[in-house]
Length: 327
Image (cartoon, rainbow, N blue to C red):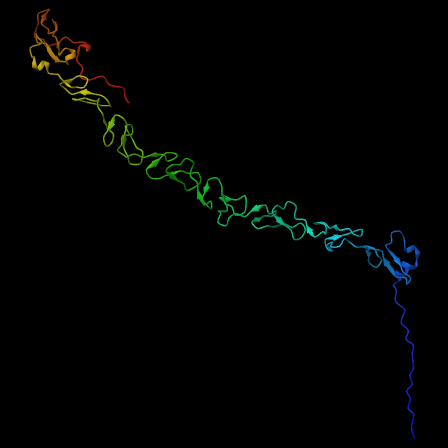
């Protein structure tokens, strides 16, 4: 017996569930009072909210900012705007404002002051000097410089500066002038002469010397030059000509020997003094009671006294010549 096998197809109708529309959306389109002059949307035939151009959001209350406006640093109250938050600026609000007073720096975030190369400090106003520049003796106005403060010198301002005008000295501290051996004075400008050199009659141009001033000579400048042409004389100071005994004249070149050669010239026991020719060759110092050039005239009787009439100073011969002015 044959069996009939059949397959029964049962068609069950499928009904899609109704689309869920939030209550606020229904109210936005169904309740007329929800729409007003400040609303930025319209409703389509299906009751969907459609935002007006330039607006976004569920209720179309979020304005669309200018294209490119930084989403973190910018905002807008109306479509197409790009208003910057505090600390930022620029057309797209993508530029930060550095810390007020920042001089040689830049910012990555608002109110920051990151220094450019060669600058330091809160406001990047302090230049960084050359690496070897002394930290206290040197300074700089621009990066990489090394300018020395008063009293210091050298490439890196590590050397002291001598007192201005110091000639033969050195320093161990600023504006000092310590003399090298052989020099003295505030500026070490005076050479120290040989120890035996006469201080008044000699001088020197370099240490250890002894140069004589005009009119003096000798190793220690302690000997004077006599008057030029002085023959038989000497000097105590320059340009003198003090005659030796038995000599006279300006140059001590006339021998005083008249009395020796003419012993009987002066009479009556008077004393004979030899003079130079220009003064008459001789002078007789008469004893009391005699007179005349040769004391040949007797006025009173003589006695055994050997006293002589005192001659005036103008009658006595001089063995010295006139002293020239000291030089």
